[in-house]
Length: 110
Image (tube, rainbow, N blue to C red; front, side, top):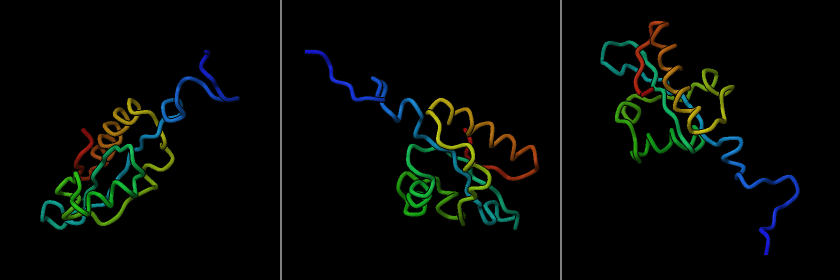
């Protein structure tokens, strides 16, 4: 029996075709104790809001975000999402480098 497909569907799942990963940026208050703000750049398969909540709750969190994370900064990333996993890896690194080049303290972004 042949595999059944629905109109408008393909063998590639919707998450794979469009991508469901995101990059996100968190505003950090005084991360180095020098009264300067910073940013944490990350990527996730969750929504940025869910991932930030996990950081703050201590679930697979970056300590710097748990301790110093104040809020998400969607104006720096919302226009980029969603994307594939490979795109998110590349974009996370590029976004971190762009923020560093502007003189900001940046954490994450590997």
